[in-house]
Image 1 (cartoon, rainbow, N blue to C red):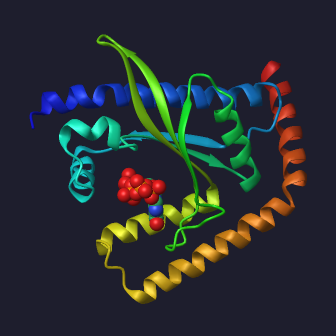
Image 2 (spheres, rainbow, N blue to C red; image 1 turned 120 degrees about the horizontal axis):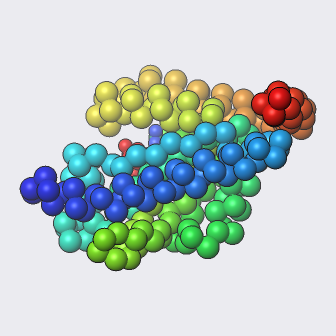
Image 3 (tube, protein in one colour; image 1 turned 90 degrees about the vertical axis):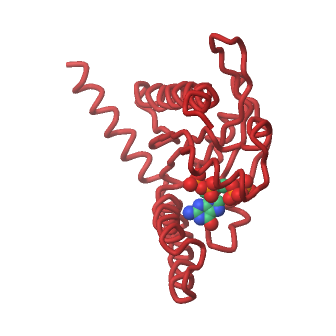
Amino acid sequence: MEIQLWKEILSPYEQAVDELLLKFKHIIKDYRSQGLYSPIENVTGRVKRISSILDKMQKKHIPMDHIVEEMDDIAGIRIMCQFEEDIYKVVEIIRNRRDMSIREEKDYITNAKTSGYRSYHIILNYDVYTIKGLQTIQAEIQIRTMAMDFWATIEHSLQYKYRHNMPEHIREKLLNAANATVALDQEMSSVRGEIMDAQNSFNYKASIVADI
Ligand code: 0O2
């Protein structure tokens, strides 16, 4: 397909990623400017590469004229949190918004994937206003702790390297590492109150310094 046509198809997704990034970054800013602990540590976003879209269309037998309805992760946002509890706080924030309508929620934290993957996914319907008018597109938001993100990033690279034929001993090591991230998140949660107090007082001092 012509590159110009792809540009037209992907343009509302690029706009959605830009807008969603801005909105989530403002949530972080709002918390921090009030000297409060932000449940969102960091946010990133991307539009799926054309080659990955084509791979997925082939894998899931999605025809070109069905990608808007059937492909939910062309626009992808990843939200990183320090603690597992923060993930559910972020889910609540999204549920309460009028500009993000939830289509589906997938809790791979309570129900981790067999690979060991953990993360909370929300599929949104999101309205973008373009020169063609209103377009409602889907976007996937992945919410995870930094430990979950570390594991998923490494595992994703290995999946890519082995092209889904991961040797058994590597798979086993990844499962052990996934269990270690569960333990790490639990240990960190047990000191969450202490860490939040320390960060609030640090942010407060930093804001006084910034005001001077
Ligand atoms: P990429 O390169 O991240 O965009 P499918 O999309 O076919 O995998 P489904 O049910 O539509 O299946 O989506 P699912 O499994 O809820 O979530 C899809 C996305 O979650 C993946 O996108 C990954 O980003 C992430 N994910 C899901 N399972 C795993 C896993 O076992 N390991 C890692 N590292 N990430 C996972 P894509 O399209 O696979 O890739």
